[in-house]
Image (cartoon, rainbow, N blue to C red; front, side):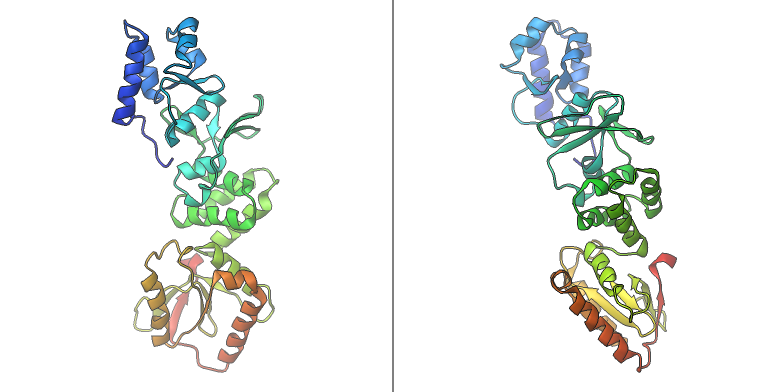
Length: 341
């Protein structure tokens, strides 16, 4: 559902055009334009407005047209593609409806939000909430003031989509995955998400707030956020930096550790193929550990599975390493917190 084009693929355009021509011998320009713009979909009221008679509509339905949602008609048969499903939901909700929450977040390109086939749409509070099939229409007392209009679609703005999606998914990890990915990929800024969070309702905001705090601290993945939370639960370790910038004393840029304890120069790495959004090259990730060693940096590796199974053991291991390193010279590297970069 990422991106949107008002142009139909060639086969679908031809099919919709053929249906239109077969419907009316004299060809109605308004009907042709409507079906082209809405990818072969229209509401019953739209069809009647552009000249389709009630009798003709009834005759076509069940033959080469079909009702895809209450009041929404496709001038073809067969399954709708993802874009057409969005258009159908938009038409079902009405002109004031806005594609929202995880549906909008997925449309904006956030992979972590694409976990449900349910299409979320919001309407002003004076309208009715309703649900049919996989389309859920909810009411809002705080309309999005920065809606994206793309062809027949009205899409929630990026910060609003991210916060609503993170608010409505189940669990902190799912919320963090959405927020962190959106920030790391530059889809939103931390500041815009924080602003949207503060302007919204308090219900469901706790997990979003934790997720935004993690993104603000500079974490790049959910396991990194888990790691910082685990290490911060004890009283021995000082402040932990997430993804700082390291430079050797001769100015060479070093790999970025997931977590860093600056006073002893200790790096902690979460080794996971699935969660590193910025480093898709697994070989480079493994090589980074050896680079740290070349500069005298001690590296502790953990896995997301270990973090989940025994977080206390992970914290105690890091604490022991920290205490052992306090009696040794700190590696000659310069570190800068992510927040200052």
